[in-house]
Length: 275
Image (cartoon, rainbow, N blue to C red; front, side):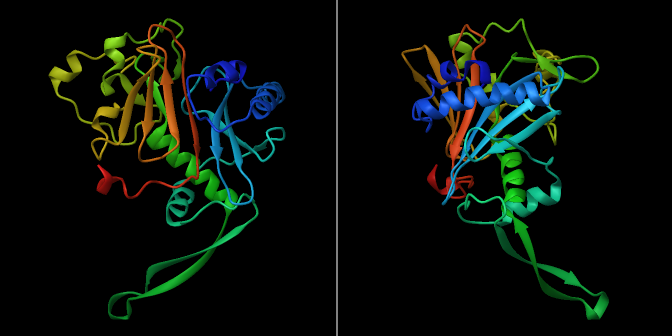
């Protein structure tokens, strides 16, 4: 949700979990954050609920690049922001192994016991190793996972230039109502790790400048997205059933769209048994 129009962007997303006071404080502090960090764009990413406190998350971009140059911040009071380190593969793996609710204290340490192989040949054996992981590190990995599997953008909202940079498409005027009814019109807004192989027939109907992301229609398990209409055909709302609390909205025939996550930061591992 863009900082400049936070209140307006929150309206289509019912049950967003923010009070009017929090929305006002966030809008003001995010604009100050953009100025102080010299960012070109800042948007409210969401809130991860904890036992003792909640994490308010924001992301910002420098220059025109919107995909690979994002910086992530968190706040405990909607006013003061701390910059998070970029996620690494090890941090993301550790975050996946930690179970249970967030505490709400960045300095809290989890004890993570993992089994690994030691020795070689006939002397090979497994041993248990206990690592201490700070909650701030878990927060970094969890946000990266939710971004990878839950961040959404409508087709055409972003454009890839010949240099490989992803920029806002200022010519985007929104999806039509018929387009917005299809999951194929919505993409994962994250760098594609394993590009899906497409046939020549599929490539013939695609534009490399805007069809450079993975479509939601290929997500596994099938049915992990709920597409609904609100206000008649005025707003299309997508909800992730894998990350409960991730909500995306788009107003057809307008460039207005956005997503927000309000949840406990735990993946819904029971989803395959619920569909």
